[in-house]
Amino acid sequence: MKNFSHNEYKQRVQKTLAVMANKGIDTLLVSDPANIYYLCGFDAWSFYMPQTMIVSSKLGEPICFVRQMDVGGAYIQTYLKDENIIPYPEKLVHVPPHHPYEYLVEVIKEKKLDSGTIAVEMDAHYFTATCYSKLTEGLNNCKFIDSGFLVNWVRFIKSDTEIKYMHQAARNVEVGMQAAIDTINVGTRQCDVAAAVYSGLIKGQEGFGGDYPSIAPMFPTGQGTSAAHLTWSNELFKKDEATVIEISGAYKRYHCPMARTVFLGKEDQQKLDVMNKTIEALEEGKSAIKAGVTADSVAQTFWKVLDKYNIKKDSRTGYSIGAGFPPDWGERTVNISKGDPTVLQTNCTLHMIAVMQMGDWGVEVSEAMRVTDDGFEAFCNFPKELVFKN
Image 1: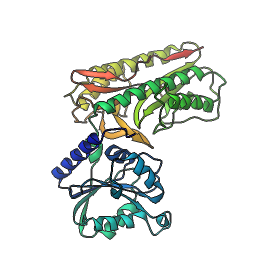
Image 2: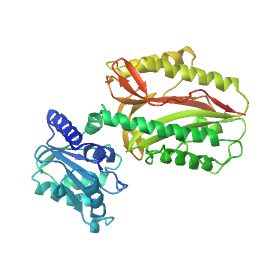
Image 3: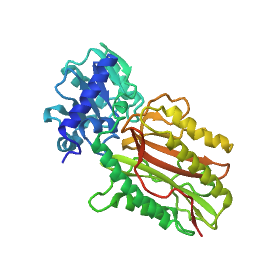
Image 4: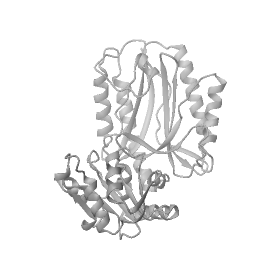
């Protein structure tokens, strides 16, 4: 069963074609697996090998270009006609200097798309320098430009079905977060907590099991809370140390992240005070969110609280979320940071995250939400306060 209706996929392609026409793009080559999934529904752990969607107004529908081994999955999962799912032969897998994009060049020529302007996702994680060189060497009658996250921006405003999937991801992350809080104890191995979190995220709730998240669960603990993006180890959790938990539920590839902080020991007033200020900043920033305001104005409201308490924070405090594949659940569009002029719109979805690093320790809390006409709707209903476990 497809995750979206054929009509919704067609609307997405039409929106993409309209932006392409406005930018003077004749053909778009899509390499980001989240963008491929968005446009046709293909979802497999195949993105470690070259794969591409070809989008052009000259085509009746897009072409999905995948490895021969993965073509069966594309037949099953996408709405595309079989003739528009084109596999490249296995003999091109890991045999440099030959490369699958040499075959893609021949497909583009056969479809008479080898002229005009071709846009490529220059900053997509899986679009390599070799991919680009094979295209430019083989298609010397074309002008190549960066697509500039074109499909990512088409994805910015979510449909009702996408919002529904993110609500389910929220239920799954609540299960995973509760598992983390319940199992983090003095003397417990960090890896055992990671196992409990994965079990919660993937088991989810009855009838709505979770997908693998695009980012591994992160558990910086002790001095590690002063750093970012640390995962678990085989070490034991220790008394009088905090642990930041940052995880995400995922349902049909749509993500709902959440961050919370646990402290193993008696109530620590210094950490409690900083967490309360962190929550205050998060809540103030959220209060500025609604359709029609800029990301900058939300950030300015958030930072006013930090300025009041003389807390320094250089990193952004939010970003757009939605469908995701490793290594990121962010959409790579809007940043909730000073100077970002992006206007928030109804049904764009954000992860607003407040992390405070105070030298050799830190705390963190976050909220995932959708923007509404007059405010926001939080996806999760989960306490934000610093959890003390004595």
